[in-house]
Image (cartoon, rainbow, N blue to C red):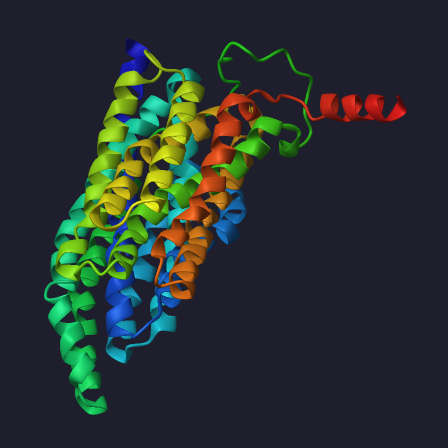
Length: 433
């Protein structure tokens, strides 16, 4: 009981940071159609919003691990928040010049800060308590994350996409000069909200700096029951379950991001008005919120992390298949429902992949965060397929099928792989015969 109480305070601080992650990350679902309108973009171009945000994780995750080695978790979080504030304030000159590249630059800088922040926060949550309840603790973080995402969709969606259908209709009949004037005014809606966000990030940096957030040491985790005693490892790549976990998280990122960041574009391709479709990303976040609540109740008391991942993978395959073979709102509902299972993917994969890494915990966490680039790559493929075949936008959903298939593999076999050498020996023996 005393041990549980000892990490309640730091988890509250981290939960506040996860709230910030959610507000900043999931507003992309609103920014994508907003930029598509005011900057006159294709589906592929507009989904560069997600790519710019997530590619920062790929480039900055390992440098972030190096920074944390010297700063520690607490100071690293402060630096991450300040970098994020720099990225969000870049939206102001981007809006006044209506320059998409500057917006993307701001998203990349914000993503850089998020990468540092999450490289510190995720392993902190994982190693501050027992390994078998990692998914449960990350589930609590997910509740904070998705609650913030819902608020960002509700608040900023009402600002950025209010009367968006009428704006689309007006620019379709306007002259070149009139269109430019309408869009110049429309894009400035982003200025005041992002100035407020910048101020909040700066205040949070001060709060974390002044907090009593303790440093934690990466020690050997408690085994999950199937590990065997291991010799000393010299490289993080000698942990097969981590390497496969990185691939799994790459796939999971697409499964989580597309139903949020891509659903409004998908809805528009199905001829559903923006006034209605602007709420769909919010509905997906509600489904994810329910999933996170379920994870805190079910894992590990009723379900192990690997069993939960298996069920989520199977349900994802069923729902995406249903969305592909249906039309209109039925297809939308199927896509929204994937949010429930997608909520459990991050915590379960992270818990299975990060276990027992000892001195490699920070670099292992960095590799896992690099895989989040899947949240930028898969939406680009998704948007390209809509542009390529607008008559049948359901084709774009097929990008998620191989993702869920790999997640199913990892949940049944991949997470158990403790050594690469046994595979090599086995193959060598087979060749010799």
